[in-house]
Length: 133
Image (cartoon, rainbow, N blue to C red; front, side):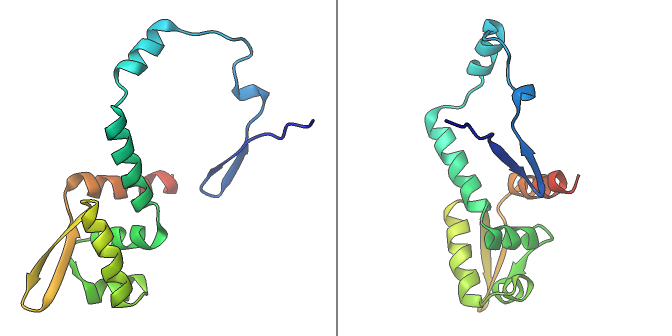
């Protein structure tokens, strides 16, 4: 039986797991394990955080969030920026609102959206900065 190396994808850079990046002997560092375990979020928090990241991971939603990272935009503006219909933008915005990533205000008949808070702004900026490095 042949074991194929695991392939991890980081942007466009493909890396293959090899014998160089695994421990050659079995050992556990109790202090390091205890420190790491003490900072682990509870199961509910992990579930919510991974759900949030799954929502952000969709390319269309990420483009919408990136556009909103520049400031408040109406649904029509977002459709023009992202290149999809207003209906499709509205559908994605409902999902983003449900996950507390965006908020909106109405001015007459126009709905203006913005990122909910600084955490979302930092999340989007950090993701873009990270892949550009």
